Image (tube, rainbow, N blue to C red; front, top):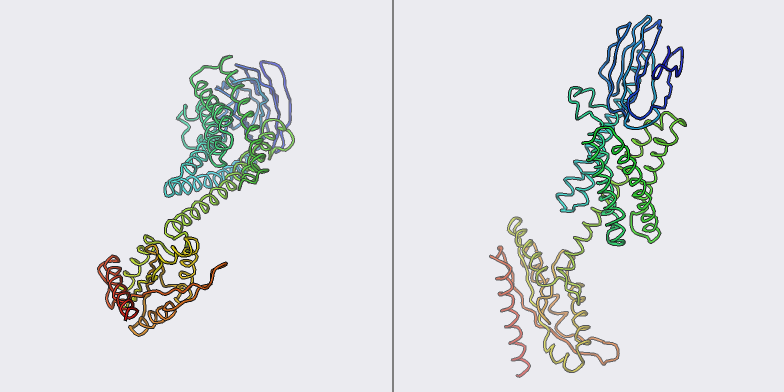
Length: 493
């Protein structure tokens, strides 16, 4: 088997199971002549990554192209020759392969199964992260989904699986369409990583000009190249794309190293995933002869690992958002001074307890607690002392109730406690216990003598669910007022 470029012999081999040769293809149009004398049927194939177009001229034999992820031709038994006219986007090292038919089918099957699993992973991540982003209203997740989508299409075009299904759609399979998604992948990856690691907050100018700016230029260059015929302008635009992509990756590496050193959560994981991509690109573009498997699959494996790592980071972000949301809800519903529910928080929880009673029967016991003569405590000992008294009263109430009961502060010196019970006896015991505890207290405050404190406790039992929380409070407030008035009459008497 003899392979010539523009009528110059490049290599001559006698293929066994598989033979490969690399030829440096010049810029522009070249003619490859394949001259064979075969004793068994074989397959001749080559990659189309850097090829703009190719045509086959068959002389002296019957060569048929088969549907595959890359240009592949069945070579018949006997002597024949064929010319391949190839138009290259730029000067590069092309690999030509000829192998027996069985080896070719086996290798293609393994490759397509591997890539199918990879595309399935990408689709799962795209859908999962997109819908999580919609649910949480966080654009970072949608950006990640868009990045994975662009990268998956980029690999789909690069690996050529679409040739198996839509060989008639020339533009979809063209080098121009491939370049557009190369630019989109760089652009979306940059925007996503910047947002995910908050680089735009830590380094706004570097992010805006060094990362966003360069990524935008890469995208515009890829779009411009899709409209250009093969010429020196497209060649230099390709150089701009590759160099700016390298600059973006170096800037990201530096910033992520700094973020990791500063202890920014999960920055080290993003850094590690980016390093994997850099190493994979080295095997893909530089160390092409070191390991054929890594040359073909390193970038795909690195992206799959990166996708998993970034999914972990995204999941961590989701967890953080949930925790932040829960904390915000707790803060919004908690009285800062006494560490019990505030009026709004208590009202929401009480409304849930009303619904529970409506569904499960039982009785509700509501206490309305007002500290007697609290203004005198503030006027005599100061507001700091008054605040400490409120905190102690809140702790005493909490210690006298069950964990499922609700305690809230609804006014300056007013507290409420609500519990659900199986019968009125338990409900009355609930009120009696707290009333006896708060009837006559002696509170020790640092630097002051013991302060005498008492509280008036109003109590209402609801054997059926009341109309609203507001009506509950109004009834309990009236009960507390009657208790307070009775205490004043006894005191005056």
